[in-house]
Amino acid sequence: MLTDTTNADGRLRWRCRRGMLELDVILENFLDYGFADLTLDEQIAFEELLNFSDQELLEYFLGHNKPESAIIADVVQCIRNTPSY
Image 1 (spheres, rainbow, N blue to C red):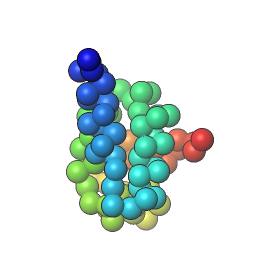
Image 2 (tube, one colour):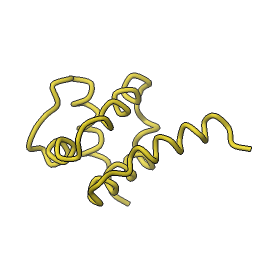
Image 3 (tube, rainbow, N blue to C red):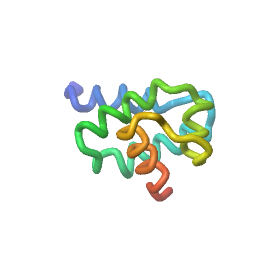
Image 4 (cartoon, rainbow, N blue to C red):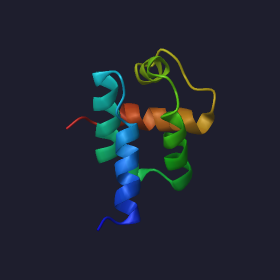
């Protein structure tokens, strides 16, 4: 039987799947190696970030644009700083 935590992790992982392979890789890498280090407010902001379009996310992650919300901008910076393994 799955726990609520397992279900929540699975739902979040599913939301990280995007229409662009590049975003899948970036978001899933962050979920594996950086998400747990976020505060609760930052984790909530990460979930809000997943509501943005693929094009907006790509522009944020490439540094071509910056989110208006300071906390979402902080989360974007955390994602950008997470090493790929």
